[in-house]
Image (cartoon, rainbow, N blue to C red; front, side):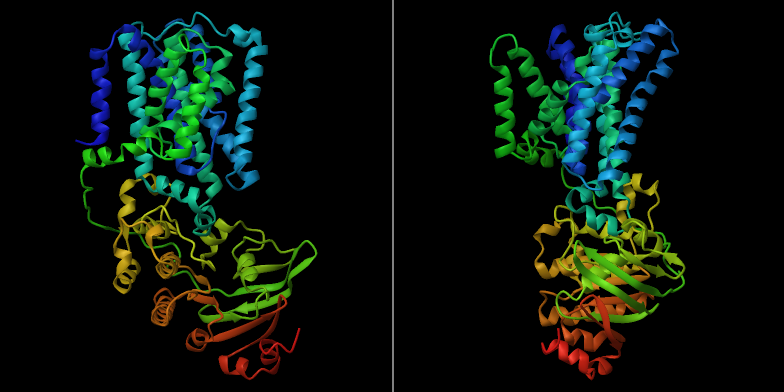
Length: 575
């Protein structure tokens, strides 16, 4: 028996174990739990904390109330009411698009904006009495046809909760869910694989708003009234507390937190004077000592109920859109980059080949990594232009450069997704350039494989231990994992920033072979920043020497070795 089936059985058994009042209370908290699942999705999966999530619960509740009052129990209400939840989701998505596009990263700005919007909505609903009923709210809202009994309301609330959990489970099992968790851990890395992280976060927020809207829509019919409290900070804060106490990292955690803490406080509210203090203390204790929430304590039971995961056959991934793309030259023309008064790149000119392996060398501070940052769109040039064939990359966002130009990158320090499995890390790279928007909603896409992936697993056995988390790998293994991920994207240009840093001589020798093999197998141009001159000697078709943010010399390895200016810099005789 799976944990999901066990939960459904508990929901079905509740009506036979409790009285009518308990069923009424359970129905109400099921609706709150639906909204709390949305908080858990945003906070626990994507890593963005919404402090005003009651806004969407309340918007849907008010809209549903308006429709029910105007419709006077007409049958067509069943068709129109879902639009109330959908509107809440669309508003949440629009807010996400605006906020994430402006801020760019997850952070306190998003949380504070959602809090401000919730407070604003409370003021509007309180003061716009002609529309909302003011502080007293909308009253005499009729129930939906057929939902005029406690059991019927319980069934509707339970059905909504099960539907949201089922939908959430589908999303978490899909590539989209994996990408959300990856964003929470390393948003920069996801963007460098060509995924629009701002859009993905906005989609998550929109879906969480839809979940809250589903709860709010049924709430209006079930309660018969809607007050400004349902859009305010009080309920928003409770949703966050319930999600945290139950366990924001799972779908069922917010449900457990809502039912346990919510029903407990409803009982204590009339009997214990300091019930709010008790709620706050429980929240603090769980956050400090049980960061995974109460559901984390139940993990052994959940794993026992779920049993061993089924092993399924791999599916051949579609051919990458970059496969067979014509080779183009990467040109950096008169690029200047400043950070305040500091000149990082000074009218830099580089003309990198469309194939083969090039190495960029130079002393620390020469501008090597900054050059990669400009090419990949992470650093803006104050003047100059970067082109890849006829594509102008200078003003393009990082994810568009990776997706459109097919520029892959390995960062200077191992940059993987530590809390994801090795298989999930490799899958994200495999989806780059292959997965369409609809593919991201198909769980079986996680089983994609490719000839390159099979070859990499033959070369590095640890890549086949798919369930092992990346956080369990050694430094060298993380370097190799990230290199493998960069290769799997089948880029047209592969930027490698010190790929052998921290590796043993044997590991370095293997990486050299893999880089040469990848260049030939994918037909891409490889550009390497490296201080290990043995690697440069073995790999480089051309060498570029940077100094003080400008190109000092270029040529073959022998020509660079014989260059007096280069020798002078490395000997410390020239500034």
